[in-house]
Image (cartoon, rainbow, N blue to C red; front, top):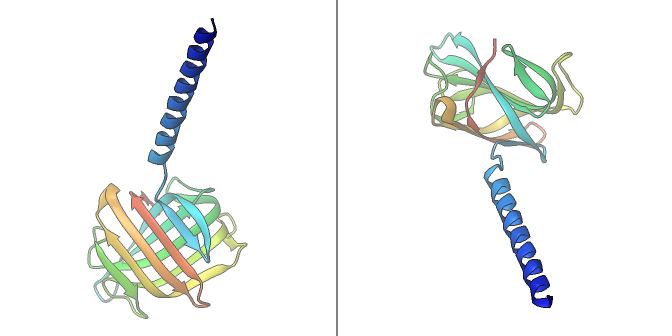
Length: 177
C-alpha cells in the first residue's frame, strides 16, 4: 500500500510538471513584439492605422501611420477610445502605400522623409486631449520593411526635450478615413 501511494504521488507530480511546462510554452508563443515606448513608459500596440493624404506638391505621397495602444481601437475607419499612440507623417515615392526604406526627419516633404511625429501616453480620441503631455519628435528614423500584413515598422525618434519615442510593430493596417 505504501508503494502504491508513492507511485500515485509521483504520477500526480509528473502530470502537474507536464501541465506547467505546456502552459509556459504557450505563454512564450503568445508574447507580442508589437510594443512602443514613450519617454520610458512601455505600451503594447493593439492596432495600427494607415491614412492616405495623396500626392504632395513635390511628387511624394503622404501616408500617415497610427500605432495605437490598448484602449484605442479603429471603429469604422476612425480611432476610438483612450490610450497611448504614436503618429507618423511619412512621405513615400508611391501612391500605393508605404514603401520599404529608412525615413529621416526633414523640414519639407520628399520621398523617404517624415515631417511630423508625435506621441502621447494617454490620449482621448473623443476630445483630442493628451492628458499625459504630448511628445513632438525632431530627430530620428523610421525603418519600414516588408509589405501588406507583414509590414514591419521600427521607430527610433527623439522628442524636442530629449525624450525617446520608440516602437516595433509587425502586421497589417486598418484604413483610416
